[in-house]
Amino acid sequence: MNPLNEIIIELLIKKLRGRETLDELKIIRNWLNESMENKRFYDELNDIWQAITPKEQSKFDAFNALKKVRSRIGVPKSDYIAFSDRSLSVALKRILQIAALLIVSFGLGMLSFYFISRKTTSNENQLTEIVAPLGSKSQVSLPDGTKVCLNSGSKLRYFNQKSREVILEGEAFFDVTKKDGQQFLVKTKDITIRVLGTAFNVKAYLNEGSVETTLVRGSLAVEQFSEGKELTKTLLEPNQRATFIKNDGTLYLSETEKQVIKKEKSKAIRGHVIVSKMIDTEIFTAWKENRLIFRNETFESLVVKLERWYGVQINIADEEIKKYHFNGIIVNETIQDVLEIIKYTLPIRYSIQHNVIVVQKK
Image (tube, rainbow, N blue to C red; front, side, top):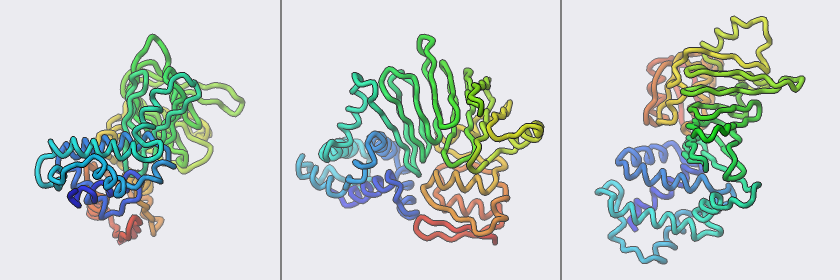
């Protein structure tokens, strides 16, 4: 097997685990940008990876597995070419076969788990869990046909094939299939979103002080219980955004949301929903198309998104930097490219050591 193939596979597994260095991330992104075949291969591997338990992921050794499977199936060395040498039309098919076989060959196996978790329908308590590690995304089709795109650092769970109810930690975009008037529920720690057939984005990271629901089309209801256990419903129309302010966690509010709060200053904002109307939904949903859009974003909020997007740690050395504002669009740039762009627009400097970035005032 060409050594480059083994190196790339190792780097891809490191990325799925969220353990790649900045230099390795740059190699991976360059490789992904070389061809659609490369991207398709990574998507296939990523889909399988998301379907397994953390315990199985920790035991996975890509290098030894590749060697074992290569000897097992007798693949000619001529079939393993450097990904950058020529088209992957022949090699990709073989590599995908290897990926599937090496996954099956360990314990219960990732691929077998992937199918078992979707075929076991007799047990209503069967739990299916989809995870998108830091630095990556995951796409999945639910049993009812609903399509979900999970953002990095997110987890989606549902308990059986017939249920139209999911539990979300993190961020996801839902394109819900309308089905015989049956409601589809997205439950988070703080609120429940109830819909029929619609497309919307939910951001519900546990360590953040808000749960944000952005409606693209259709309609939905955001439900939450007050301290007196009274159910409150907030109805959304397209191009509207509901932000539930939690009782704890760090708040990262947009300028529009801050203006809404100012108008409702007589109310305590904690435990309440504020609604922003006529918003540009693309700002909040572009991430699923590998773009990040920032509009007057505070540097503190920007850093949180970059940490998840690239799987890095960013330390801000000067408190004043957190109050800086940034406008821009990020498309397929490395984290170093992004920092260079920011450096030209804001008075900052930065240093990188492994996956840790320190940002200081210039």
